[in-house]
Image 1 (cartoon, helix red, strand yellow):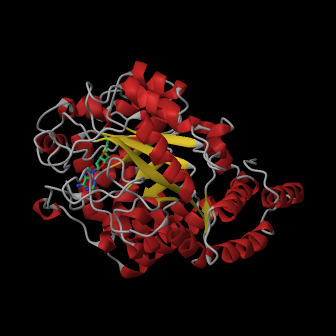
Image 2 (cartoon, protein in one colour):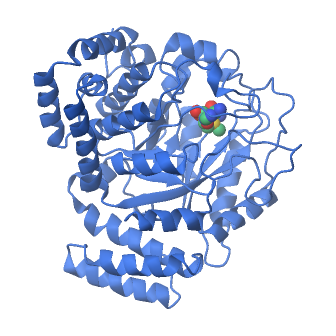
Amino acid sequence: MYNPKSLKAEEFINHQEVLATLKYAEENKNNLELIDQILNKAKQRKGLTHQEAAVLLDCQDSQRVREIFNLAEQLKKDFYGNRIVIFAPLYLSNYCVNGCVYCPYHFKNKHITRKKLSQEDIVREVTALQDMGHKRLAIEAGEDPVNNPLEYILECIKTIYSIKHKNGAIRRVNVNIAATTVENYSKLKEAGIGTYILFQETYHKDSYEKLHPTGPKHNYAYHTEAMDRAMKGGIDDVGLGVLFGLELYRYEFASLLMHAEHLEAVHGVGPHTISVPRIKHADDIDPNVFDNGISDDTFAKICACIRIAVPYTGMIISTRESKVIREKVIRLGVSQISGASRTSVGGYYEEEAEDDKSEQFDVSDKRTLDEVVKWLMELGYIPSFCTACYREGRTGDRFMSLCKNGEILNCCHPNALMTLKEYLMDYASNQTRPIGDKLIEKELDNIPNPKIKKIAAENINQIEAGKRDFRF
Ligand code: SAM
């Protein structure tokens, strides 16, 4: 039976409820009166239920579809302004005991090069990332209790935080590792992680079991209930995601929102972020063998509908997507993007030789971080290297209340400008720097509170004079 408050996967992601939702959406996709009601509710900026959002996703009426896109754009501006947070993934190890059929790290893959970073390798990788200007990482690893036990992950996090090269520092480490125990989540929390990210891959239980035929990840309930254990272990910020292409997107969309509703119902706070990866070509993986690939237009509509359904939740897009797609979905709701990513183990410090490949998937957007920063600014966005919220203890519901109070312009906005200034001083090219300085000058004026505006301007002068790491 469907119960968003249940701690059992099959009750909060209830198959019958998903099917009923899809049926309701199908039946009402031309019900313009209902669609207008849903759009009116969405305009109040408090989000939508999974049933309501599913109707919008199915709606084909061109005028309403335009309204959906316009509203997503408006909500994005209202909640996130023009800031885009930047991060990079750091692959620690591609040893993996699972048999995920879409991932080249599956244990049967004997020709991919297996690598695991030593602590010395991490110093080299993180130094290279700091030298680009990165301040925020998402660490990634395969699941392998022998090669990548939690103690290894914890040691890596400690090393990452300890590295201070020139003016560089990694100030927030988000973690994307396999589902684990409450005890291990508590240890990750103690290690000072930002968000714990775990992609569901697919919410469809039968497909999930087929796509994960062997290994600990085969256990659907253990995987789906991971966020509840993470929150029980004290982690306030969790990041959801599905791998689009594995199952029918409508099923995934409704389930993803049911998962968000479940977290809100049980823990009083929804997901901090939602990621929207699509399957990509990788070593021995051909994305075309999966039947459920989605077009770029459907992908954009999914992003817009997520933005409308959960307006406070950050949305993440990686370099799996091209510059063109990224440009489109940033406008519709994405708030965080990766830049200059390498999906190989050790790829930042050294280019891999042809016969020594360890990549998880091909990236589409291969630009340097400087190019990404310049591109964002030319589009009118403020690239933000801010990590202040979690360092100030504004996690979980405390972050959400900041969003809901509209205090973001007095907090996130100046933080974005100050961290952008650090980037410009320490890492930007001569072409990028003047564009950024001009943008900062203009955007300082958009800070509503005059006291904060004055402090931000003073801090920016201090950054110019060599000081670092200011935050509100
Ligand atoms: N092993 C961990 C787990 O089981 O969750 C860490 C995740 S893995 C390093 C990061 C994510 O990459 C996976 O959750 C999956 O969604 C995604 N991924 C795997 N193969 C992919 C592919 N061929 N194309 C795009 N994304 C892929």
